Image (cartoon, rainbow, N blue to C red; front, side, top):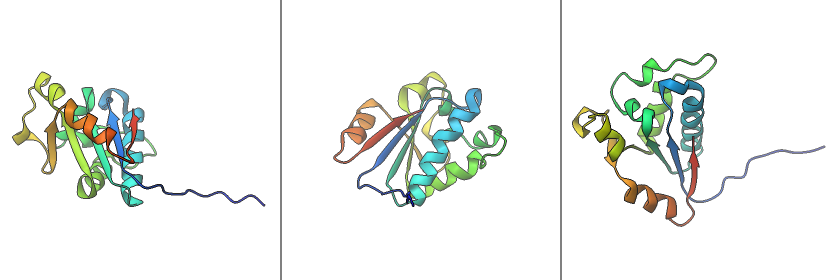
Length: 128
């Protein structure tokens, strides 16, 4: 009989999501992986870039509707509560998104911060 399992590895997970309402399925996959990792005790940094940048604003995650998926707002809340959520600084600037407009706990940071997180010892990165 085969036994299947998941072995958790040490380190952190950095997830960059580029899709938002324009591609709800891909966006939801990224948020689902992030929330699952957080629930498993993995340190998570979720980066909102491109169209996903809008999801750092209040009420925007509720606009993403995908059948048979956990509401994006619930996944975002779970990640924000136990991990880090960041809106890309250039993406925010292109959309006139300011730090004071973001959901509490969501930050704006740039490429240097992203590179530092990805290059940290034990870090793994995923892009959606």
